[in-house]
Amino acid sequence: MAHKKQKEAFTAKEILDQLDTANKQFAFPMLDNGYTYPVTARLSAYRSDSLWRIVIEVVGFNYRGGGHNGIENCLYIFGNGLSHKPGLDNANFLNPTEDSPEGNTFDPETESHLNPAVHTMLIRGQSIEISHDPAFYASKGIRLEQPGKIMIWEMLRGLMPEHRDKFLAPEDEIHQRIPPGLPLFIRLDDWHHPDVANEERPGKNETFIMLADALETGDKKIFKPTEKPNTHWSNWPEGGTL
Image 1 (cartoon, rainbow, N blue to C red):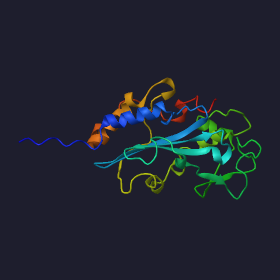
Image 2 (image 1 turned 45 degrees about the vertical axis):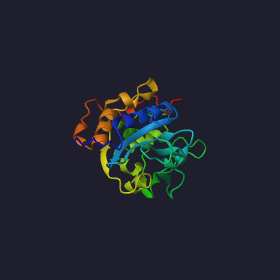
Image 3 (image 1 turned 45 degrees about the horizontal axis):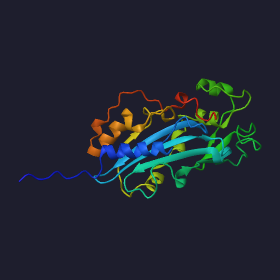
Image 4 (image 1 turned 90 degrees about the horizontal axis):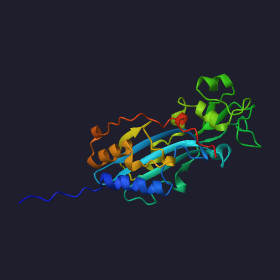
């Protein structure tokens, strides 16, 4: 007597359907969000035979927050058996920076550009130098919006890639937000992301289709994307311009 095939704990279709639903509800990452200047992003996928999680980190400067409150790492979390709605949750906004003992990192009145008198700030408690030299930014392909001032998002982009890891969530912070012991499956530092502002959706995007198939089967070899990565901030010039 033939054995009936056991139903998978989750399917690629269920994963893509969840991402598409979140996208319709504006809870999927839009890398050219008009309120946020993009800086960097990372995708981490976790799985077991019964559970899956996709964690997309989007680091940027939300000008409505201003100053250090506007420097955010937003963790978009998707998966089965979630305790919150898929996508964004108020508990998953991280603000990793603060003033150093030297003083206000940013102009106290506008909180939009660097304080010329201060040359350090703290990221996760570690002091780093920040540059006021226009040539430094030009060398990284960053065009200053207001010559004579370094805007916060320009400073953040100038810190990439040397300080990128400090802005991303440490593994223990991610594991506070996913099931205990769930192992890392695939991690992407760049990928081809859908242009959701122009009605592209994750369910039709090669990256997420292949990722969903790999998560369902547990076979990493399935994940062989061919499309050019586009998550670098320079590919999303509309971000932060509302």
